[in-house]
Length: 99
Image 1 (spheres, one colour):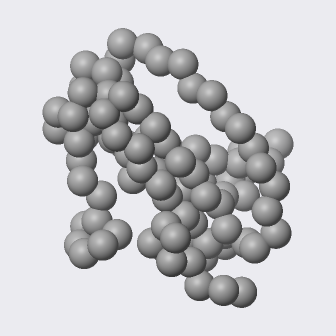
Image 2 (cartoon, rainbow, N blue to C red; image 1 turned 135 degrees about the horizontal axis):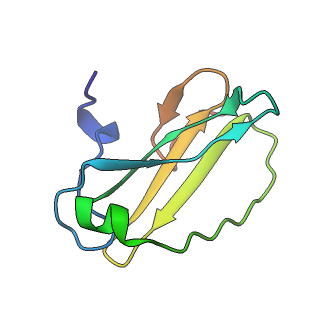
């Protein structure tokens, strides 16, 4: 299902700005590989940058509001994604509902 409106991602590569069809994602998993959470990020790579290689830096800040917030930055753009853990629901960054 394709999202529209304020949560619809634009599919531009975060590196070069060209059309990106490769979606980035991140997940936390248990030893049996079940995901605790696994948001698909609203950040994309073009085919070229998806296979060239990259350096990814992860800085983890604990929170206790039941959300995963991810900021994905590349030379051309920065994208924020907010996921409510256990629901699969994304929220508009900066407009999260209060618990």
